Image 1 (spheres, helix red, strand yellow):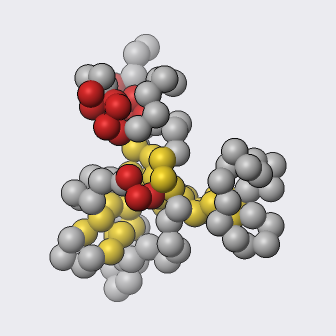
Image 2 (tube, one colour):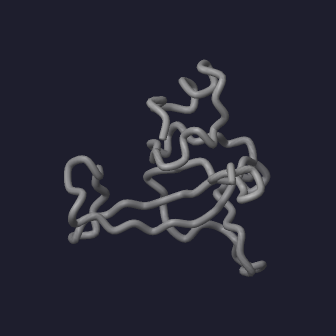
Image 3 (cartoon, helix red, strand yellow):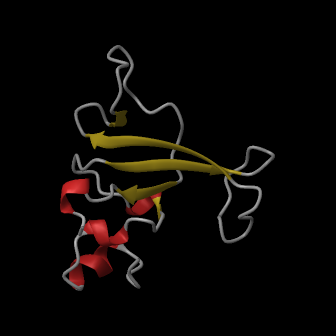
Length: 106
């Protein structure tokens, strides 16, 4: 994993967003340019949003692959739900998708 903490820092250091895989970012920093990414909603046992660093043992995470679609003004999930492809939770965090297996060193 990289010491880089944000997409901006990754770009400035010449790293791709894949260098951030494994680092959850606040949803406010997610690109809204159609890029596919992992979206997550972190909640505690009471169903309230949490920060992992505050309560890592009781965190539950809902994760989906999605992208922001400007035409829909919504996060769209990649799945077979053609009639209602919008994300069914309000994300709190995002993470770039990992590199494909073809790009990993052998």
